[in-house]
Image (cartoon, rainbow, N blue to C red; front, side, top):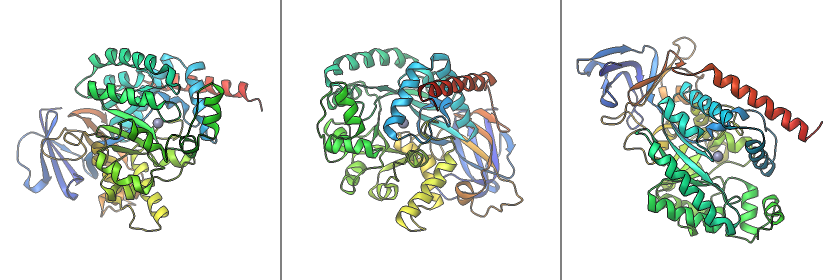
Amino acid sequence: MPARVRWHARWVVPVATPPVAEGTVITEGAHIVWVGERAFAPAGGHDEELGDAILTPGLVNTHTHLDLTMLRGALDGLGFFDWVRTVTAIGTEVLGDEDFAAAASLGVAEGLAGGVTTFADTAPREAAFEAMRAMGVRGIAFREVFGPDARHCASALATLRDQMASMRPRESPLVRVGVSPHAPYSVSDELFAAVGGFAAAERFPLAVHIAESEEEQQLVVSGTGRFAEFLRGRDIPVVPRGHEPLEIIERAGLLRAHTLLIHGVHVGDAALPRVAASGCGVAHCPASNARLGHGIAPVRALLKAGARVGLGSDSMASNDRMDLLEEARLASLQQRSKLRSPEALPAKTAFRLATLGGAEALRMDEDIGSLEVGKQADLAVFHVPPQGSPVTDPLHALVFGPRPRTDRVLVAGVERVRDGVVLGADPAWALRAADAAERVKRWRAQRSPG
Ligand SMILES: [Zn+2]
């Protein structure tokens, strides 16, 4: 792109301020230098006429497992314990590095095609980190660590230290690394505390799957259920660990700024102010939570309490599309349904979750999430056909209207999608992912004949 570009659109949605009809955003290199009505836009620079389009900040996906994109549709209908065990077994028994690399690249491409410019990914491997770097998107690659047996805490931490020492030098201005003690059913209290201490000392951001399922709740509160049986079967002692899952990470010192709480479906009313006061982000995954039958997170209550909440697609093993506009729509509809109020979560709030809310949850809101002077030029351009869907309120159109085509996407001023085409995408990724999906299907058929 030329150094200075004036982007003119039918609508500009800055998010932090009201939508602007016939608006203009001016970018200079990686930054936004002007936002407002076209009639008042300062002269100079190259003009890009976007036409019947809504220009917004790039969308922020606060929870992905990009390297599992080949599992789209593969595990529908399984209960959570079986789902977790099957995903884990597939990861070790069926798939290899080339599969994960292709799936991660495909995942980034799918996100870009839907206007996502920032990804917060969690994974026990580097494929997503490398894919994000290679494709020029913004993100955090949280390296997952597992260890439900406290006796193996020291070795798990030592391995994590080595992994982070290897990944950190490859951080880029756009892609950083973080750590993620996976979840209460896969991480001991000792390992939570140890990883928390490591992250604080090394200044790594943290992410934890927490308060996601009924099964996790059972394990934590009463030491019963499928996870408890499984752990006892491996000679790991199981005792009740608190009144709710959040207590575990609170006790381990992880309820603090720069920790991303993934899911947070089962967060009790009494804990809401503590989540808000902690400065933790919350990655709300409405489609994934619904598809796995977990329930509906208390999003409006979290927002009312002042928590930093964003939206996540989660992996394609529990959601069949990476579409943050759809997540925004679901988030709004679910809260309205849960609270029996059409005012529970307006389109404006839902779209904020997909942009500035996500940026706040990831503590990246100084740089991204809204169209404001000084912020990064992460832009998404959604084409709205003039016929059939009159746009009087662009926020309502984005969240509830027919899915708009993504015309253009820029990350830090660099074009990554043009005319709906993800630049640099390789058709071989989809072929490899399809091959992996076939192998997964055969493996599952062999394990459960009939
Ligand atoms: Zn997840």
